[in-house]
Length: 295
Image (cartoon, rainbow, N blue to C red; front, side, top):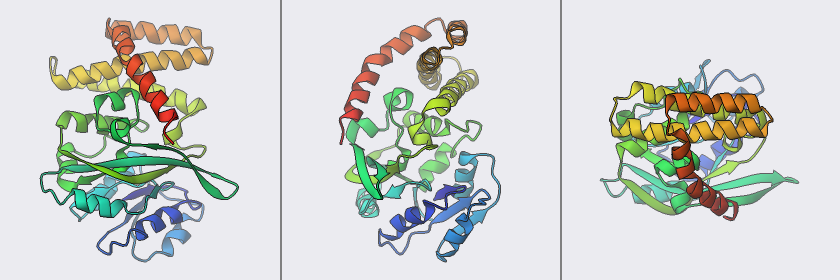
């Protein structure tokens, strides 16, 4: 299923990438939050689509709307500006031949457009996109490189749309804690398009907002979860990393007073946040170096 808002320039390619899989049994649900840029006209060219058109609170509210009407047993999540790689559905079908598999996870490719042609900038697979706490906290959350049994998403409860910029991270963390059985796929599943405004490639002001939302998500979960639980401990580790990330973002912007205030608030919430942050740094740096060299 695909959430969409004002993506007339890219939504057609996303739909075509689904059709190119050659699977007649696929239902493609589009949740359009009220586009005004010609997206509706593009969608009208594809009569097979199931289109929900109404305003939503945010991206994850839209995704949840789509998930509530899914009829198939296997679910894929495709952004309106990204593409499925050829053969992705066939690879997933083979992975789910094992009835014990709760989800299937493949590789993610990243591309940009230069002079009218696509240029691949990176391909991440294996540990770089794995369902792991390290990837939630300081790495890549490649939820679009996975296919999920609908029953697994129902157990998880979908996305928490209280977190408009970080519900994907929270979704991945809750999956980590649920410990589903994951079937690994060698195939590339998703192709992420790099462009200004993409949450996948947050930068500048968006990075500042994202760092704040990541920290607020961690704080919320720590406050909600039972003391002494493994889930709360995981979110406390997230809180340590998110505090450090927020401090660094503010410091790089020259907002030293704000950075010191964030550090102080972090110590008030958890005296060990800095130790938790530093514990993740080596793995984060290694993973980042690996992602930069993965072409």
